[in-house]
Amino acid sequence: MHIPDGFLTNRIAVSLDVISGASILYAARRLKVDFAGRMVPIMGVLAAFVFAAQLLNFPILGGTSGHLIGGSLLAILLGPMAASLTMATVIIAQALFLQDGGLIALGANIFNIGTITCFSGYAVYKLLGGGKSGGKRLLIAGFLAGWVSLMISSACCALELGVSGAIPLRFGLTVMLGYHAIVGVFEGILTAGVLSLLFKVRPDLLKIDKLSRFGLPDWIGAIVLVAIPAYILVMAGSSSLPDPLQKLLATSTTSAEAGAASGTLSSAARYTDYIVRAAIFVLLIALGFLATHLARRKRGRP
Amino acid sequence: MRHSFLDRYALLDSPLHILEPRSKLLAFTALIVCVLSIPTGQDLLFVAYFFATAILMGISQIPLSFILGRTLLILPFIMLASLAAPWRGFPGLAALFVRAVLCLVLLILLTNTTRFVELLRGLRRFGCPQVLVMNLSFLYRYFFVLTEEAMRMKQARDCRRVGRAPFFEELRILGSMLGTLLIRSFERAERMHGAMLSRGYCGEFPVISPRRFSWRDLAFLSVVTFFIVLTVFVR
View 1 (tube, each protein chain N blue to C red):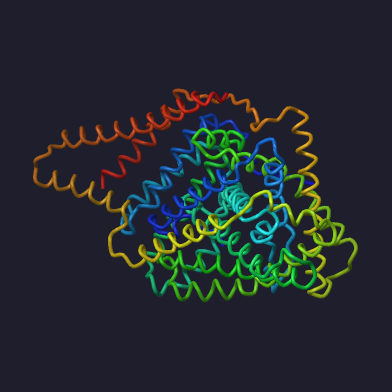
View 2 (view 1 turned 90 degrees about the horizontal axis):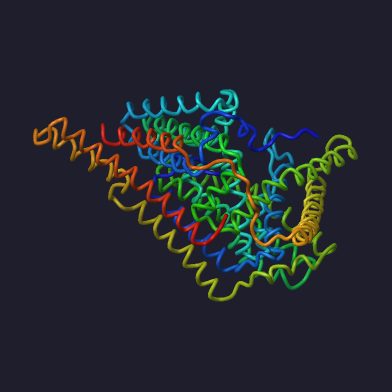
């Protein structure tokens, strides 16, 4: 389900990068992490737990095997904010270490597998009242949280791929939803199983999500956060305007060609044009370095 | 138990490895964006980027077999996309494939020529939130510990049963294994937190980094920039 680079159009990939970046920044600020507090090591070790838990797989059919994805489990344990941050960590690490998912598609992957899974899983769990009691209710709420969150996130994945034109929308939706309807059952069973075990052995761990309170304003923010990308995706799919990046490249080439064709620019003038543009590029990069350097000195970090 | 480090080839000493992490992050991101925005018809540009990637691969001294093995990860997606080929046509599919593979190889080069701690330092200096960087560094440090724990549990399970249990029994066992692993991770986090506090932790890991922005980085960045400008403006 990790989308590699090249399968999404630049517009969709970059807009999802911006959205995921914003949601990470929001979560980081909203958590108001006290660095002396124990939340930081807990989030870090649970990220490593998700990474390690994915090695414990079980055979499904033929040669394929399944494993826990863990977004909804983390959301139930830590609350959706901390969980989405943790899942973002896992996805970034998977992209960097295992090259599972691309660099520019990172935003899309964080959105699908992290944000969507955590928030939808948490919403389902809370709506079914899983936090209130143990027993059958906890099992059902945990199961549905796992299953529904996986279905929604795979639907998002298929939607992005379809809108990008990599895979036809209807075909992608059928394949992805069909596959994940089965995998989701295992995800649900495992989530419910782990929750019931925790309820028996260490019920105090189920109440840790009080550390990241998630009130009504946050729900509204989350819905807006989900609604805006959905709107952008639909608009991007239906819009006939060219991709902004490709448009930029196209205009620059056509202007150069037009200049060359009309003969107003000699080859020397064209080369100076290139050199000027190259100098601007270098200058911009140097400015970026200077800015980060100054910012660092101002904050007085080593 | 055998460990293979996540960034196994990052400890080599090639000209790419000794660059400053920020300049590598910038250059590789720019290259990936440029590969992604090559339009489908422009075969010459694909060839140019292929050669650039090949040169970087040669400089980096990472074994070709490793890179090729990692590239196979993309196959399921390619298969999914080629099932849908009748809708797209062959040239589109080929361009998709080349773009995806080039980006993947560039990403492999970026992460396998930079030590993870240095990469994190670069990210932090680019303004990445501290919580995220701390999470990543915890993940990097404790992944091995938890993996070993998980592998030990798996071994214990395999020793205790012969053959394969019925399917739902299997799932139940796996569920309680995962739960146990989770509880152990929690307890480990609590112990770690105590140990960190008693050693004077206050929110940041100090990093000793020998890398500074030098003339090498400037040369590398200007070559990459020159190449990109050349491919963007000379079409």
